[in-house]
Image 1 (cartoon, helix red, strand yellow):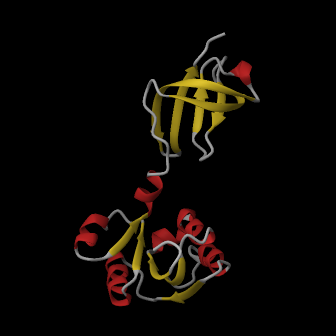
Image 2 (tube, rainbow, N blue to C red):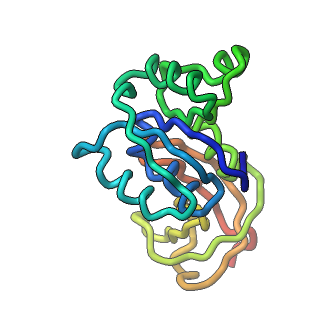
Length: 180
């Protein structure tokens, strides 16, 4: 799949998701791409795809449901790029389809921390709490560090206290490894 040209069916929900488009922009995926017809929701995704080298876009009017995306994927012997919760990637793979579950793929690249793990984070601003400092991992995950306010614009070794999944993403809570 990587580096060679393939055929892809991008499920409508996945076309609107910037993560899918990044895979083409980074040239990790290349080839012919079947997408939903142009409309207000898909316009920006299609525009981004059109600027990618080695990508040929073909509009497919029959991508208005998950079942139709599966049928087109089979007919074209393509790879399905899916976000829909109604499609089970494992079940489709058992039936011989090539499927990339975008959520599952990107979840693998998110660092997973548990209490007691140690890492380094750059504190960039004060937090809401009196002594809190806030930093971000390179993938955008927010790190709230108790007693971190005095370390703004410095890298700080921290110990993870906990992780919370929010609608906006994952948030990590930590404390300095060495307290002053």
